[in-house]
Image 1 (spheres, rainbow, N blue to C red):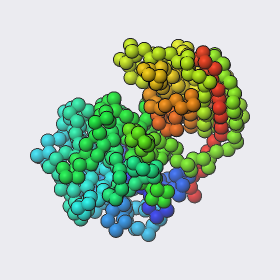
Image 2 (cartoon, rainbow, N blue to C red):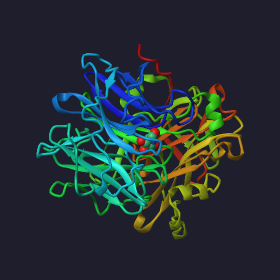
Image 3 (cartoon, helix red, strand yellow):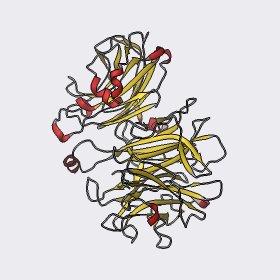
Image 4 (cartoon, rainbow, N blue to C red):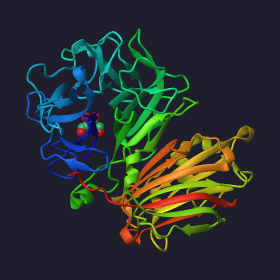
Length: 525
Ligand code: DQQ
């Protein structure tokens, strides 16, 4: 499986569709597989794919798209159809056959009205780079709008379409947003976030103060980047805030393995949820022998950080906590330099760990070396690793560790001093020591992101969700998130261990630690 498609909530049921190869464990023969759930935890995979290549407008591919709860509160899907062997792409729609079927298990793609959009000669984009329609939103003028991602050479575009009746879609003259250097805009997502509360908002909301998020999956780097900005209604364009950097240095939902994400508004709990795809980091041959590849990160609630308004915050949906089993607790435990303390009593291969770290003082924090400015966070994580011991840190968790530490994936922070008594916080999830397997078989990156946080009370929190080959970490309450995929050979199942470590000279205080063994989710019956 690859991209999540059209996540939505309709009459008590969550739907997730996904790019899926029914014939093999690597990308190809893509259909829209479909799963349903009542709680985002227990899922039922429906037997029949919802959409599969068969129509004149999608014979050669049914690629990514989005869901909208459209006019009369009816769900509708927009997706990309590939119409020939040259990979020409068009946008099409699908609707549920029977709205009284609770799982909406059959979707129809009427000949009438399909495709809804094709590359026109004046558009100036590449026909083979024209895809991934977004969720639609209703403007104040009563017209619906949606976006299609595209490219021309190095220029990336979000093409805007408008419709008065949700049937006939007209391409707007102006691009909704573009950037001349970023290449293909895959899977664009555009939505409002409240500037006064953490609740999510429907894409069409107009009656409250909001900021807008514009997310693109940049094919050149294969990461999901977003900016925060405003929606210029007069010109019908998106304008990123001056303070919101765009491009390959932009903010990311996740500084690890997380791509082609999609968000949706969940009216049952008034929240916005983001789904992202974590691809494998092993080889295609491994995938073929496993018989599968690709998983989704735990769905995350997403909201705007306040009062800064400068970034998003993310947190695993609360329903995940229903899988928590046996709990282990610690508080006010000191970890001196060079020590690691084992968290015993949890199933370390499947665990949810929440830790609050603190220090008596941050005096010993090393100065942030101006030479390091040439690196991004990932480069710095790689450069410093955990063996380069500092004043404050590295400290954090050693996840999926073997008993003699032949294998482990450290998730950790390092804290530096910058100007005027401020601190710079680096968060890393370093897969380089995750597996004894060597060579090109595994991609073992040291992922990293900076955490824009004031070290109030000299404290910082970390939550890691560990699940065999997946480590999802949330720094400082969801300010910086990193997914790593790892393939240990020894630290497997019962032989996996979990430690807290401190390699900085200032003693670390585990102010509180709660770790739970996680139960496997049961399929929905
Ligand atoms: N995957 C889909 C495309 C999309 C890409 C095809 C992103 O629609 O652009 O499987 O991973």
